[in-house]
Length: 125
Image 1 (cartoon, helix red, strand yellow):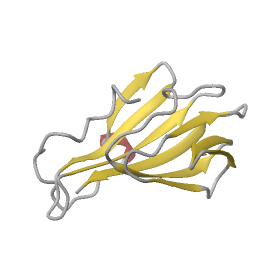
Image 2 (image 1 turned 30 degrees about the vertical axis):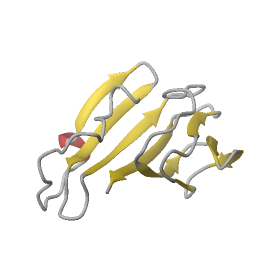
Image 3 (image 1 turned 120 degrees about the vertical axis):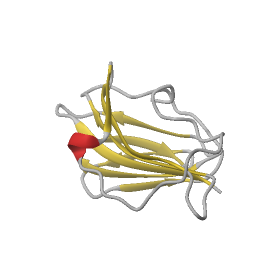
Image 4 (image 1 turned 180 degrees about the vertical axis):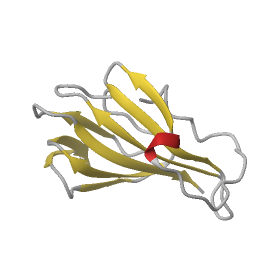
């Protein structure tokens, strides 16, 4: 996922007020699942913001646990899996939410038999 999601280092064009539906998000079919990026750019308050979703295939993880300078939220809406954050593995399902601060080790894995759908929001001040 790290290679498929825009990195938040460079200043990007400022996001405009808008609504993007699933059909118009930037879609890439990765070996681990379908990745959609709805928004990626700077805002009036942030150097960079990325919001998207990943429909993660059973038994897969988008990448090994990792760290980055951006803060990140993950919201699970379908399926079941594990999220590593804060040095602990957490069992997650619909309605679970993760927050990982800057340079915090985190990762997600689908441990279920159906796709794990989650939405992610990453930003850099």
